[in-house]
Structures are given as C-alpha cells and as structure tokens.
Length: 145
Image (tube, rainbow, N blue to C red):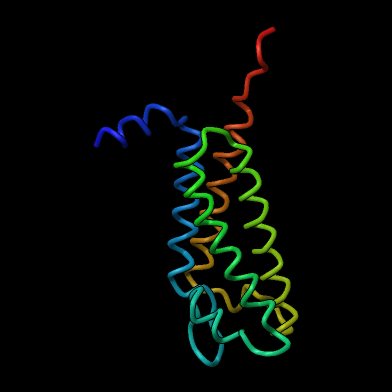
C-alpha cells in the first residue's frame, strides 16, 4: 500500500483525471463497440471479423486505439510529465477518428448508426483524458531563472 500512497502524493489531480479517462476507454473496448447484422463486436471480435483482405485496416485502427489506452495507463505509472499523455491521446483519438471514417466508407452510412455502448464509453473516456491533459498543460509553470 505504500506504493499507492506514494503514487497518490506524486501525481497531480490532472494526471489522475487523465488516468481515469484512459481506464474508461480501456473498459469501453471490452464492451461491444459496434454492431451489424452479423452481431456485436468488441475489440477482439471486431479485429478478427475485419481481418479480411481489403478491410484489415479496420481491425488495425481498432486495435491501435485499444493499445493507446493501455499505453496511457502505463504512462501514468511510469512518467511524471504530460508530454506522453498528449502523444498517447493524439494517437488514440487519431486512430479512433480513422476508424469512424473507415466504418462510414465500409457501411456507406453514418457509423453512429452502428455504434454500441462500448463506443460511447470510449468516447467519454477519451474526452475525460483530454480534460486531464488540458488541465495539466494549463498548470505548467515556466522555470524560474
């Protein structure tokens, strides 16, 4: 328990908000993210379903977003700065946006019509992580000369 007490003392509230957002996003990937006439898909079933010639990029985008949420959680425990948080957030959201655009092209209609509860949890998680990152950036102080 000493480790968690030390971790709590060393991390700012902004980083904790970022961590909570990353955990929410990670949980969202395990809940069904989208659906179609063939069923519900979370990160694993979606990656295997779209791992077909011509559409493997859909699986790649989904898995990279999931890995970015894991990287955000790991960075919380490893680093004390928000630089990694910003990079992880940009990568995760970039691939998430690419996934939405790709699903739009795949289904030829709005991807929001195929989103399930997990997708909304992921979106809330990434927004909470963004709030933590922005608050952390706002609290950066210039070094004293």
